[in-house]
Length: 280
Length: 308
Image (cartoon, rainbow over all chains, first blue to last red; front, side):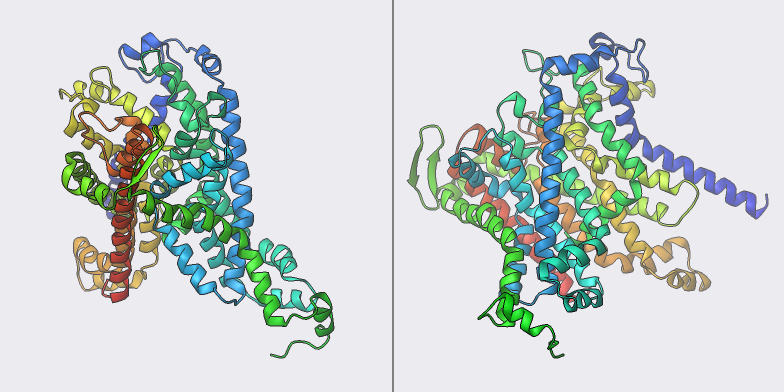
């Protein structure tokens, strides 16, 4: 065997072993989608990756069982609002912390860093009473405000600050000479230059809100207000046992669009997580 | 540098009576004001409040609250056997999850940090569970891990293994929860390791290879020491994450069976929002806060020392 052939065989073995490791990562997705097409009976029969009969009705029943369309919409609009607000709030604060020297800035950084160390589970109890006192339980307000100003928002702020600090200052100085105010410099010069950071913040914030579970669980009680993660676990029979065929059909509807976007924008999404991971 | 004289009149025109420095400061505080306000209302205030709550006996149903001092902490640490059971579970979860996660993440990163045909496909696959909601992930695995009808046991049966009823036996349930969580989150650490590996200059390994070092020696002597700072951060992040895990367990096992997977974050939720023991739950939250704080300080200290 020549050296090249040896290398070739080695490489093939390598890819095969990686593929075996990949099974538990891929298999759940395939099984989820295929079971979403099965009937309740077939699900408990002999397992097979493909359904005997493709039961499209599951995907209709998902919407009849509970206001799933409404819940889907809730998740989308909340995630969009949270993302928009986070982009504004974090880039404003990030810009000031990166570019303007002001009394209290060091203290503020220390305070914000300390927020990163405190899990949401610690502050959720008083936040529940605060929200109840404001009469905002069973509304979407806490699901919007808590992530924007919680640890996730702080991560976004530091990410923006980091990026602004690495930007060359010349353009901003030129803007100042042209008579732009600070807000103008931020909006017209700094923000357009930081699209990669804004994109990263948008991606991680959207996904965080989309997948949020503890806050909806604590604050929401009526079905029409539910978000997707809360709704998914809710396809049960009167005894509380899961109706697997509906549950998996609904889960597929929630997961597949995210996976499609992820596969298309894989590089960008992975990089966004890497940026925050190193920081957080 | 002197401020340009051309601009000076305009500045005083816009904000009469304020010095340049003052104006800069005002703008800065205007920029950070939403963050500061949100921080006070939703973070600092609640953090102070939870300390007070933890010193009260407060029942959410009867709406009564009395000051009890350290009693809730004493309850947790000395009287309530559940607490130590929960702590044991949390530690088992963390000690099971962290090494498994790190080892797998490093192995995957070592396999995937250099380009080859198909490398992107594999990276995409191993990272996919990270972007998937924990709820969906837990639901699917709960489905796959059912006793006899579950796909995992059916597959095991074809190779002659009689799988346990994964989520109904305490030890197996803990094992199953850990492994499925590792599969869910390992992609994140893999990415961090890939970045760290790509930052090591290639000459290091090349030089070692010319000296006749084996692959294992290169890993042991060159790569692993260079990864130490990354490893430190990854270990601490993963450990903190493992103490916070909630949704995954809530949906897969509901803390059961026999409280076998009841971990700290879940216990806090249960005490506060299912049993309405606000005081006790707040004391637990403070204990959790100190655990996370201690882990973070260890990380900072080790990084300061610079030996790692």
